[in-house]
Image 1 (spheres, rainbow, N blue to C red):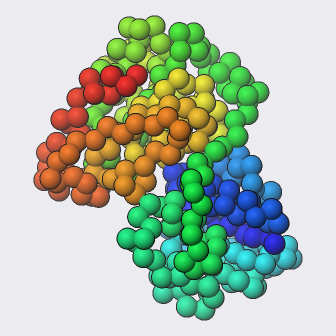
Image 2: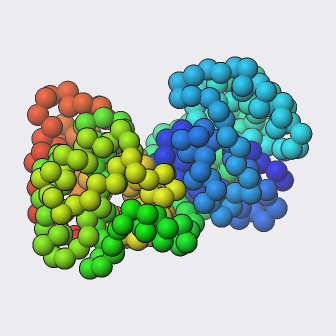
Length: 328
């Protein structure tokens, strides 16, 4: 059976989609190809169960009907039996529809009558975790999920890792603490810079290398931490996504927010300490084999807001660095 997986646009969601890929691959008779935007497509190349990756060259938030139609017509020749559409938007289901894929599966989402012909009604109480919602689309409606759940796993390229370590002049002597202080969702997910800096200073005092990783848009956040902890090295914007994947595999431990790199770190087998503020580990927890969650039990948290609606950000400000340091 040949399946086209229409993948998410967010890094963390894309990593979690590997749980679905593994469920499909367990059948033994599936050929899984991925359709993804440029921001996440490269991650599909690191998934063992994916045979090919197709890039949807449409910007985030852009409709791009002409490009979607043209891509759908090209993909029609690949003879897919089923498409599984993970994003809930109407536009995300258009390429499989234009490709004429016989079975087009996904959650009801944005009233996707017609473009999906295997629409499922989501019961959030039955599937509280995002990975459960993804994996539930692998089988028939109501089918049991695998036990235990598969854990996302991304392949590490050791040669590429050595090359980026050399290119950036990095060292792994004494061990590596990687800090990922960004979170594109908003400041209510970001542990304050002075807390990250305290952790960085302690690690440097212990002889560890400290790397700050993030996207080009997170340079300012990382530089703010580096100014408070001069021994740290900011790599924000200096690596590709796949280089960040490989570098995270070289770390002994990663301290991060609820972010895409949190999921990447777990998927390459690195120990993770994840700080949660406005969001909940009951929906998108770190999924690695060795992961811990640092979170305060406040009546206002989780609020799932981008910025603190009360203006104090206590859920993150009052989460002291010593709590995280105890797990390093």
